[in-house]
Length: 344
Image 1 (cartoon, rainbow, N blue to C red):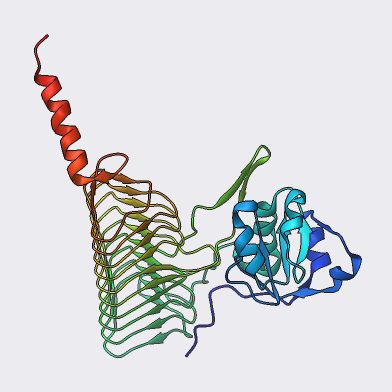
Image 2 (cartoon, rainbow, N blue to C red):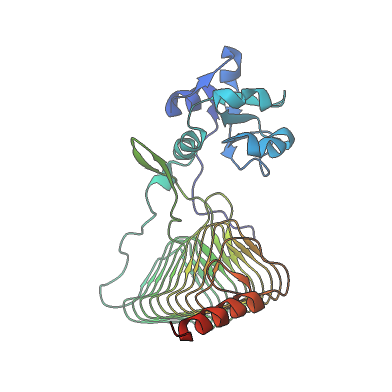
């Protein structure tokens, strides 16, 4: 069965309505009658979608987009292909964030369930589907339209949110929370872990920081472990993904739209910024960091406390800040140590 999604999309709206709502301009009055039913990034948009472009660096993707309309700066209108209606604004990213609220009104506030059972015991919504042999501990909550697979344990005080799917033979630890997520089989979410909360997305300006609604999901593959008090943010438009067999230690932060491959190891206090991509069998040592949009190839090893700011090739060994090939970094450390031992 196809998942129905976590946010209810409103009825299609006209470009005139969107332009007025976000403070943008339409060149042609006739274009205002065109209806839009969803929003996507340039590469993912279809013929009934709205997208946005923030500058000439995205000209190639803009030229190839199938979107019906695009929020764009006045200086970049010349880049718009003939099949795309320009909606002109000085701040397309901010306008797109506002447009999400127009098409997805429910995205402006987290979904919450009302109490539906006696206080003290588990609170299982009557629309939730609970498999055979499931254990639900004291004070745990299973929300509306959630689905829990066979033999899974939801420990005391854990929260499984609206429409969340959790597979068979899983363990959701005490005090953990899972929202806006689809979780595979044999997954362990340790105590206090947080899955599916808002990504940290704001459009910054002199007028203040405008919150970007996050309408993506978290997809967790089979056999994943997520350590205590680790966090996985849901995606902005697309999904945050963790591949099968990946093991994540305590106190790790995984930001929105991150894609992690299969059988990776991510050690404690590591932070992975938005839209970073890790291949299969990548290892990130303790307290390492990965900058947004960076790609790390299959089998790469990042030493503890290293910080990756550029793409890393397959099988590379990296260390230091900023991260560089391990042998180069080790020689630098040795040279500094020798300098420190020299007498004046």
